Length: 314
Image (cartoon, rainbow, N blue to C red; front, side, top):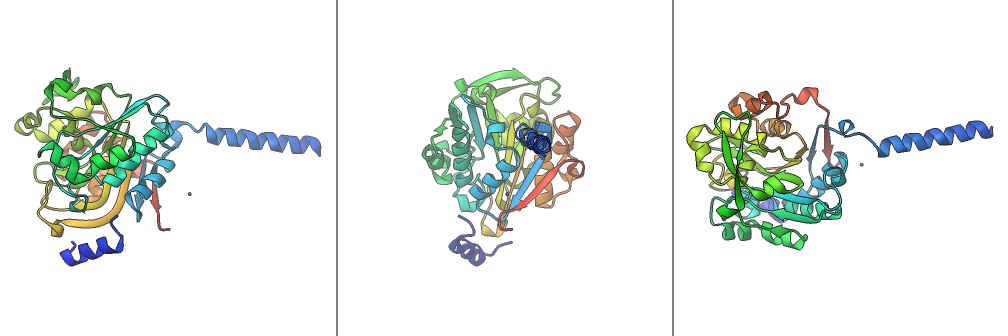
């Protein structure tokens, strides 16, 4: 773990802030090969991309390119929800919220893919206005051309059934999560006193109205079951500064590790399996991950999936 002096030193150094007939046949084959690459099917892309040793924006740029580009996920005219963690009135260097540089770059990328609208919100634990300001996310989103929305108005939520859920039979969900064409889930990786870890699946608690119900009736099961309502189209786990203890809010810099990593995957379960590995936590210690896999929501088998690892500095 970082001492305060080491942490501030890293900040100061900038550590925080890829014949004729024969000739004609060859050309045709070359054109066909190029067309095949351009039209590469979805199943040909990596299932998960892990990036390290860059800034949040650099790692996203490299990672999304490896996954096929933002245009694979966002089509012209689409409405997009980008869902970061903005739960706490904490600054980016405190590791409690998603890095604003990353969120801003994702919004910019979605707009570059000709999205019609890009919305951002989170049902904050602390006062929403303070969280938006302290995290730097509201400023980054607006600078990138996105729209911040409130999560504090119950009229913006709709009650929906959770088909296949046991703990969650129905849940009140923010309309943007239900209605946007594309959902991009952007959690920050950190420890959590209640669920052991917070990453992709747990980040979705920020789109529901009554999170207390989950805590009262079975947090692990509820986290696993909620994606039955809808799975995000893309998950981008911010592991730049990782809170390895005393999460989700943290007590100080001694709780943080500067990992400079990012995990990208369309598979929310696989993203969480990789996140647990990054935190050094066994899957058995985070029951909701295997529970979600059992519900058919994704895979925990990193060894059986196509995983691409990239170092920005290499």
